[in-house]
Amino acid sequence: MNKLFTIDIHTHILPENIPNFKEKFGYGGFVSLDHHKPCCAKMMMDDKFFREVDDNCWSDEARIKECDKLGVDVQVLSTVPVMFSYWAKDKDTLVVAEFLNDHIADIVKRNPKRFIGLGTVPMQNPDLAIQELTRCKELGLRGIQIGSHINDWNLDRDELFPIFQKCEELEMSIFVHPWDMMGKEKMEKYWLPWLVGMPAETSLAICSMIFGGVFERLPNLKVAFAHGGGSFPATIGRIEHGFNVRPDLCAIDNKVNPRDYLGNFYLDSLVHEPKMLEFIVDMMGEDKICLGTDYPFPLGELEPGKLINEMNYTNAKKSKLLAENALNWLGVKKEDFI
Ligand code: CO
Image (cartoon, rainbow, N blue to C red):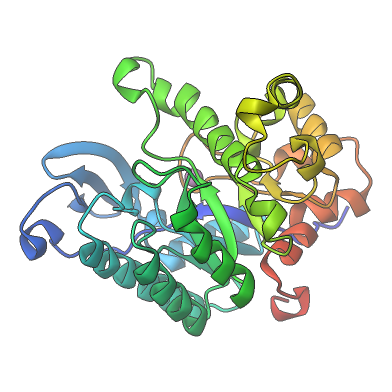
């Protein structure tokens, strides 16, 4: 069988050299890279070790080489969520975002057939966020990646709505990625913020956008959520039932049953479990699941597309999941990449 055209919508990248933001801004908390040996670096949060990364985290040459080996035609690039820096001073978050967006735009410009770029914006200040979103569009990025919440705001907050509205107007897609996991102080052992907190964060983001009426008011907004929607798909029955029995709590901003929005947004395929992939494809529709691997991190799908390719699906259906749905989400054409 010929290999099917493959786009990975969930990959992360960092610039090889990150400025010393702590020195520049006069306070800490930012991530830096300590290049302690060739091809490897430690991601450091001030003096605290965060994770070890290889050169495929920053080198476009290394990534293209691996993509060729792994059968990935196009990667959608976004920053690593710890770089969002929404907690910093607004104007400093903007500086970080501009730096990261220029880096991704440059890589896309040099390799337009292999990469599509998503930006990051200072969501905690909607005016600055819209300013940088507009600049991202001019840079040729196809959308932005945002966190599952913004400091104390969930994604239903009125303050955030103008950003979503502008995304719809500019045809900039949104990738929602969990970060700053809820309850992390209660689960320091066993990597639980990643295993328990992240899926809950993604469900928090989806429920906030549904109940807050974001999808209702912006029907053309194109949003994709990471990790197969986290715990949302498995709990849709509970969410709908809650909406039905306690409309006084759930239906205060939007009267529409949450189930009606299934199929109005996208999920990536990163669920590591054939039955769950089948479930989300049935639930969301075969036009709404896009390959996502979390490259280059170890909790991702290490052989991109393996789960989809091993399903008992027709090639037409696999083609949708491996690339066509991603093209539709991002508003681009396959011809631009082959
Ligand atoms: Co990720």
